Length: 245
Image (cartoon, rainbow, N blue to C red; front, side, top):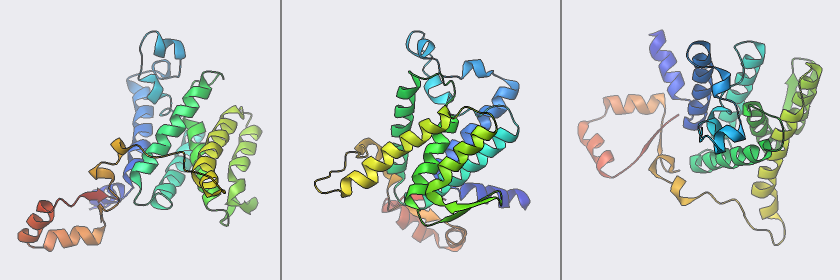
């Protein structure tokens, strides 16, 4: 019973958040037993001269060995990735995927000029930044010590990193990329004479990302389990798509 409950809860996580968080956890688990971080880190020479293309992706998936830093990053990644996908990107999965691709591309481009070998933490800060700018009136509490408005959250996290003795280059990169996306997507199109520069490619707008997809809630699952086979046939014959949340 507990397994079924956990499984249902896992499947209710929006698809992009579920896929990315799972990939990060599985990558860390693989490092414990099967591979080493040296096979994952961002290295332009190995990528472009030795064609180790997987490094363009794996450097976003590894957050270090299991410990406080890993758990801290996973909590923030899961929380704000899910809130974005269920909030301003609800029904816009293709646009959310495009934001991932756009942010990853910019970070990879900037990564050519700075000494960063893993970009996952910067990517998390980008997600936090976009969420915070789209929810400016939300009150935040940081470990019961600070109360502030949501737009200050990325800067509070950067200060926390500084207190822990970490480099703030990662945080600044995430904030910079997040701001570029937010400006091009939310600010510039609403200016006089502004246009929307970031347009999701049609190749991403497939049926699985269709905003009209049906969301499978526990109530929907029960309905499908108790409904008649004829209605199921009619649903699939009409081409309706299903989405797990």
